[in-house]
Length: 66
Image 1: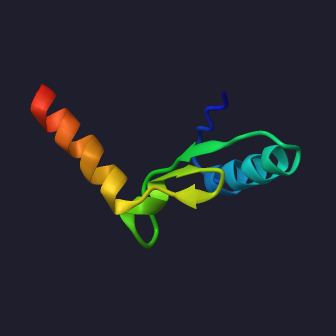
Image 2 (image 1 turned 180 degrees about the horizontal axis):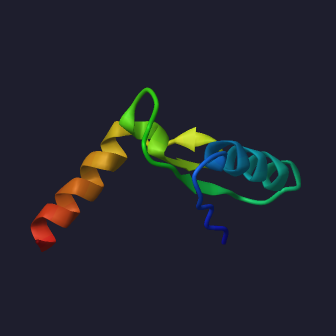
């Protein structure tokens, strides 16, 4: 698990780590904030962004628990 923090370059570091790990056979997950184009790009597994249906399922589950 890696947590990247700081003022500048976080996105570049996260994308570089993701690429390095993926190309060496590791499964990668990424959470970034803020998003650039769509909310879905905040959460991805192996470079594939979360789908709208998955976001809604998470939201519904949290709404029921709260």
